[in-house]
Image 1: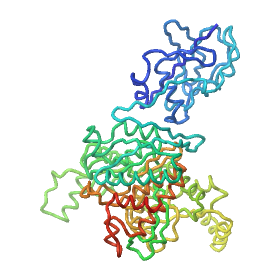
Image 2: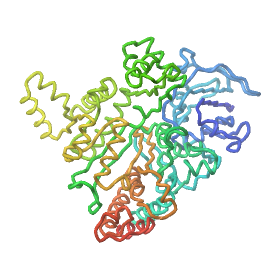
Image 3: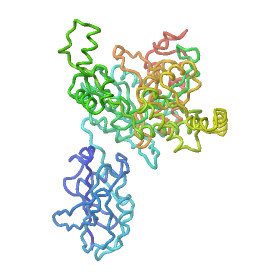
Image 4: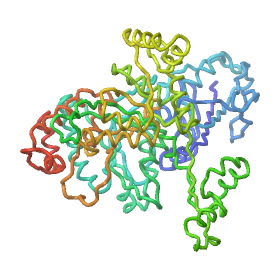
Length: 602
């Protein structure tokens, strides 16, 4: 006697409609076997199972939900779930008195990357179901899935392997599919040179055993012209599916219009770390006397702070609602909004311009909200400390403006210290601990304690006020190593430091979620449209961002070759115009030629 098992999964997730488009899978049901047991699976289920077993699109967060009985023609159903709680339902260990069993599983939110394994582990206690004995072993190899990839509307992925995350670590095939965006303005020129550098480094490092399968996707002006969409779903889906990608500069209109596409991608993929290493390459023109002293890595929080994009235009109904709410609930705070009422404007104008009639002047106060969370802080600071420990750096500095913004920036500092002491108690020494010892035993005892801790190999965790930091990275750059900071401070600090080592033209950047593995590496400069299609600008920012990407993938040998090639190219004094105009005896060459120069010096 053969049991019919119908496993019906449903997932109310935005990605699901893309996974189950009709062109991907058969219409109603597709039979296949698990061991000797026939399984009848709906098209919806098969599409999900195949995709989930062969990708890591979803995080391994699953809750089995209660389902009412369903009826399908010719198949009896039996509900084996105890509906105790919709998000925490337990399987009943009971014998089912039917030879035709239909298991209905419904999940909410993200599905597991291996649903068969989880299903098997829960059913292993069922030694008998009706008159027939069987045990479902959690072995996904039993499933013979159809080849299935995420459905794309306007782009087609190349042949290649998928990067995945296993046990918190990236699993990178020898031919990973890597989505890329050429970028706007000078982006196409820069990408053409950079891609040749990446391919040459990988080829030389691994002698053809490894190769990147480049997958072009679109965003920005090119995408708007091509698809009438600044950021198509295809692009977001590609970065979600293949985990790691790289992009050139994208247009960001100032003022009205679309918000930053860079910020949008970071928030959609929850790329909470903006990683900005800043180092000096010998020979690069610099405005400071000792640029070689600058060797810092900035961990900039990427999803919170005022960059979260919660803001309302002055004079809009939304802004007025916020003003009214504050006035009604926090009148003392409302008084701090200098021109939030007609009376406040009138009182000032009596002094500044007595003849000016303000009776018809509308209240116009732009409102922005600055969210800073404990969890957001902890995951950023944790990432910075882990990086510092892994790379044997000297210290981590928490940069903030907590002396003024006590419950956002100040909380960032306090939560950062608390996380450092809680998670890395035996590996770090914090200035918070120094302050406690000073209060209890005096400053000399605190100094001795810190000295002993650092001598034993512990990592120093300290903090600095943001404006003082901007001064001290100029006057005392050797005091800083790894920096953890909030979004706006990190934006200012990254570009200020880049200027000390040659400008953002060669400053790389990466946006990373160390939990899911998602990462997008990018140029840190703008599109420079006046130089578009002139084969003129420096490709260094994208080249070094690619070096970061290769190192993130674990391809350090290829990354090292890029650094070696760039050092050699700069030392040869055959450089792009931005360097040539400031270097004595330099020869100006094209963007494409500079790429070739890097390859020649690998």
